[in-house]
Length: 185
Image 1 (cartoon, rainbow, N blue to C red):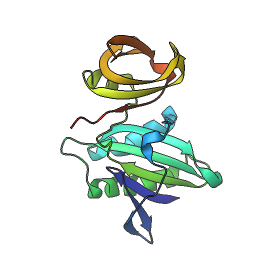
Image 2: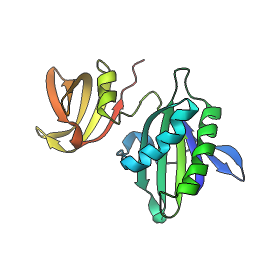
Image 3: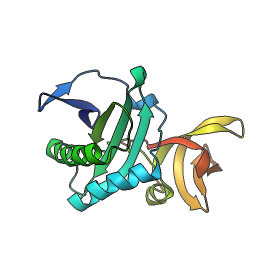
Image 4: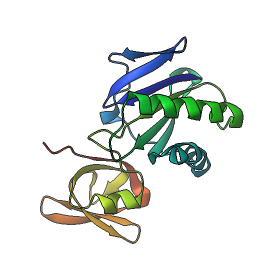
């Protein structure tokens, strides 16, 4: 396993026990499709992150080239996330992952703040950020489109309500590939 973490899109990697900033180390997150981790893996990560005093925003688990995999963990806290927070969580989580061994083969671990373009992983996130601008990508077309950018209205049942160009869309949560807030400056 290798270790790295991301703070506001800066990538840090561990080499020889020392953290180094890496430049232009893809993949860049803006174009990626989120691949949510299995519930058992999320619960394993939650069992490490939350007792340390952090919010677990979400977990992605995806294959990478060359047979390795990527485990990306997003954490947050009211005062924000810094390098020392990501380092502490990465250290604790690495130990648990080494013992529990939930991922077969080689993988990279990234621990990150959610950033300004915060990913939305569950229905509670969509409800919490109602009124915010977001980008949502579906895994199949709805009314002839897969990509939506507009204002989150809220949640009804298992649907995310989104106002796009003056029209309200009901986006089935089960069809959402990825969703992120759009930073407002």
